[in-house]
Structures are given as C-alpha cells and as structure tokens.
Image 1 (cartoon, helix red, strand yellow):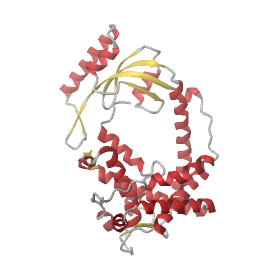
Image 2 (cartoon, helix red, strand yellow):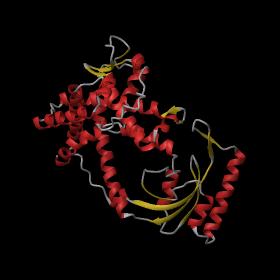
Image 3 (spheres, one colour):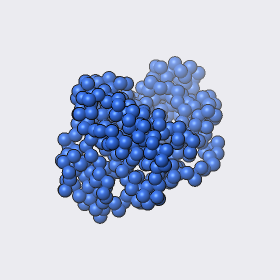
Image 4 (cartoon, one colour):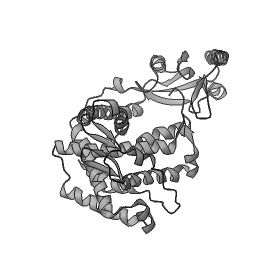
Length: 365
C-alpha cells in the first residue's frame, strides 16, 4: 500500500511473473551467481550453436526461448502498445526484464521435468493427446514467415507443451496435501483511506532519490497540517484529494501485505478512527479506517495465504532438488538474444492455447 507504484514499476513487477509457470523463479540468476560456489556450473563450454543452457542432460534451445519470448512480447504490445519498450525502470529496460523472466521460467520447467523423474510422474495418454492437439492448433496459427523466423516445427511445439504440462503436474503433486485451515483473524483484511505525502523524487532512470533534509521537513509540515484538519472535522476524502501523492486513496490489505509501520497503525484503528503520522521508507501516511473486517477481501486473502504456504512447501522441495544439479549457461549466445522486430510476427496464443486444453484437466484434478 505504501504508495501506488507507477505504471512502469507495476509492469516490471508483472513481467517478473507473467511468463513463469510458478512464482519466485530465480533459477537462472542462481546459475550466474554460483560460478564461484560449490555448485557445478560451467559457462559457455561445449554448447551446440543454438543451446542456451543445459541442466544435467536437459537443454533449452534458442527456438524454445524465442517462442516464449515472442508470445510474451506480443501480449504486452497488445495491451500497452509498442512504445512500452522505450521505457526503463531503475536502470533496466522492460525488454531485459522480460528476457530474464522468460529465461528463468523455462529453466524451472526443465528442472521440474527432471524432478518428475524422481517421483515417477508422467503424463497420461490423454494428457499426451492434449499436448498434441494444442501443438497442432498453435503451429497451424503460425504463418510460414513466423515459422521460419522462430525456427520451429510442430514436434518442437508439442515437446514444449509436454514439458510445460509435466511441470504443472509435478507442482500439483507436491502441494496436493497442503490444505491448511486459515482463521478469520489470520486472514483479516481491512479497508482504509490514506493520505500519502512522499519524501522522495525520481531520477531519469525511475530510481527513488530521498528528499533533502529541508524538503523532508516541509513534507512533514504538510502531513501535520493535513492531520490537524482531519482531526478537526474536515472531510477526509477532500483532504486526500488536496494533500495525497497517491492516486489510490482507498485500499484493502491483510497482515504482511504492507510495511510494518502501516500495518501496526492500521490494524489498531477502529472504524472511522484516524491514525497519527506514520513514517515509512517512502514518506508520511495518515490512515483512516473504513472497515475493520472486509469479509469478501478476507475470504480472498485466505486463498492467497493457502497458495503462499503451498508455494513455500514446493520451493523447499524444489530448491533442495536443484541445488546439486549440473547447470551450464551459454552466456555468449544469451547476450545475442533480442526481440524479433518484425510487424509480420504477431503470434501471441501459445499460453492461451495451453490453458484451453489443460485448464479443465487441472480443475478436475
């Protein structure tokens, strides 16, 4: 909640998840960082010309990467327009962010297929058929021009759908018995209005630069003035419009969703009570409690907590498994990878077609 991130920041956060089969994937980054660690990592040694990385004997080829990358790129453009690629945030372009995310996503899929072998998990005949049907549909959707630039055939697309589906099946297997009971108190979600007065500015790279001492003091004086007027009976909504640097004045959140200073202040308020000035890393907040218990949001938060615990259980198993795997990363080839800049390459349905064939199966399970 502390402050609503601008569109670009939000896009970078979305990019970190949009291509990943599962959240929290830092696998490729760990491959880079472990060069000097005990984990067996070799960079740019003994690769085929089109081999991006290798985990044990499982390889990612350039064509696979480009299918993921191109579909993700085009989905972004369909929503935000081509100009989105001109933007950067905290020194990183959105293109580079998405490249890293897609790469990490494929790495996790490959590693989870190795994990499937450990648990003797395979796709059923019906699931194999679904992968074939999905591959036929997606490949048919590609023009000859797109097939040539992506360098794909139907068999490769099928193998990608098979690996994607098997990774999902492994995840489902590992979290199948994780169904914790979540109380209303644990998941309680409140709704508040807040006045936010920032204590930072942004440089040309979108990085936050703290205010000078004088500017911060002036910001605090504004916060004091707003608080005095709020406690004096001025309409809070009007004060938000006049003072707040946050365009989202009403928010709902649960425990652990916001900075601890905000959480402590907000959860100790009764309905219609107003906090004092709460300082965070980004500025000053004045909080008014609208609802101490939001039933709909609390129920949704229970689902989030359950998914978080399932992910934690999965990550513990997954991290232990991949720690000792041999990982090889072709840095030279990776550095040459970029988006396909061609108006005739419009494919964006790879993931949509997958969900068309496999979502019903997953819901049934």
